[in-house]
Length: 334
Ligand code: SAM
Ligand code: SF4
Image 1 (tube, helix red, strand yellow):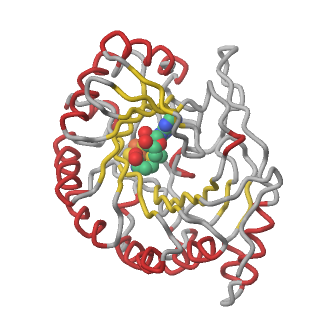
Image 2 (image 1 turned 60 degrees about the horizontal axis):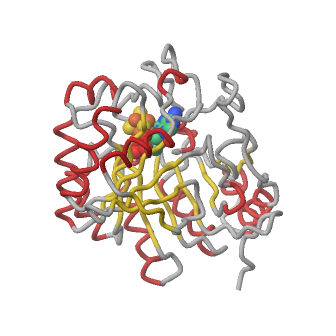
């Protein structure tokens, strides 16, 4: 039996987030610039390498795997990868296989994802207004995503809608979005904008809408009960008593969630980031490619976990982007 992954601060690493591509069919203004430079294909881990990488982590105790990107469902052949992961669900080693997606391809893939053992999906959707949707995603079209949401529900997937809280943009839709999610029995999570990557002319400080304010606005119309539930991540939850719905708040900038952090992230090129808010990374592609045996890879994984920092340094408090990260969110997948 392999010893589980424990970091220097005695946190067990049981959750892996894997970015399978840096590409995307959208260009959300807070995430990418319009003219993003993407990586040459040969830099990317192949589907087989992605499988080997995940399988190694699962052997070392990872129980939850979230696939992200870029947009994970635009990676060619991605269903082969999901189908492969099904064996770890069947063996019981993996407890949950899930993904974060912009929803554009769900109409096509929802049934296949369910068949591979996926039961929950996070869909990012910041507005229910067609024009605003086109504005915020630049290339996205709302009806396509709504068809994706419908397909996911129909396939039997539990859906959580992720909304990035943007001041002056979706403030006015707060109640409409909450009610829409309740009507479709979908969970809802709000995310604060994080200072990730150079995104061109957009001013992120102008976009910042504190979730404390958002919560206060929500409380004007609904009775909110704080829930004790924690997922080892930055989310806090409340229940809306009127609808019974669970709402999450992800506030990486205003709360310190690092002490219970159970996760690591891997990019599509096989770099491991052990903290979303720090630049520190290790390369796992080299040991993966160096040998057909998995021992060097496992050793490199253990070494990387041994470097996991205690926490991050994001800070908007002085109205400058303290702790700003040079990499894009699409690089590590959020
Ligand atoms: N393309 C997929 C999607 O949009 O769901 C998966 C990758 S995307 C990078 C993952 C999540 O990060 C999305 O919910 C997106 O809204 C969020 N995100 C991107 N840039 C962000 C930023 N600067 N601050 C906060 N959240 C961000
Ligand atoms: Fe693409 Fe997701 Fe980034 Fe939007 S947030 S540009 S959908 S990767």
